[in-house]
Amino acid sequence: LIRRIVERGIAHDEFRPVDSVTATRVIIAPVLMLMMWRHSMHYCHLETIEADDFLDCLIDLLTRGLEVPPAHS
Image 1 (cartoon, rainbow, N blue to C red):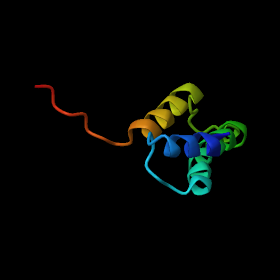
Image 2 (image 1 turned 180 degrees about the horizontal axis):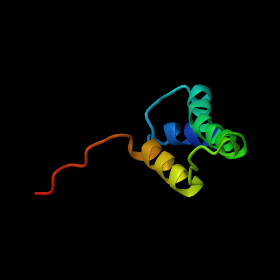
Image 3 (image 1 turned 180 degrees about the vertical axis):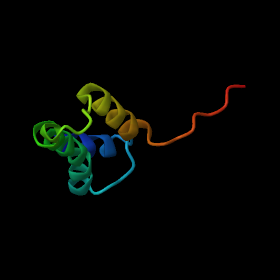
Image 4 (image 1 turned 120 degrees about the vertical axis):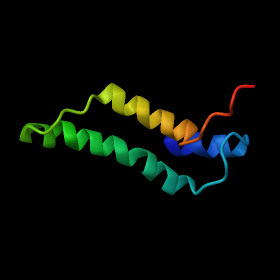
């Protein structure tokens, strides 16, 4: 599903051309880390990661990167 979204975005000039297979793996990797943290690391009494905040940040970074918004004139 994610690969098809990336490919469709590329086809419609909404995303820059990238390797959709690699991009999909990169997008999925943080979600896998979150799952491992919740089901393994959490039990070691490490700091809890709030899933909603984590996913909001991931989506923001995926859609806007680290861009600086243009200055308002």
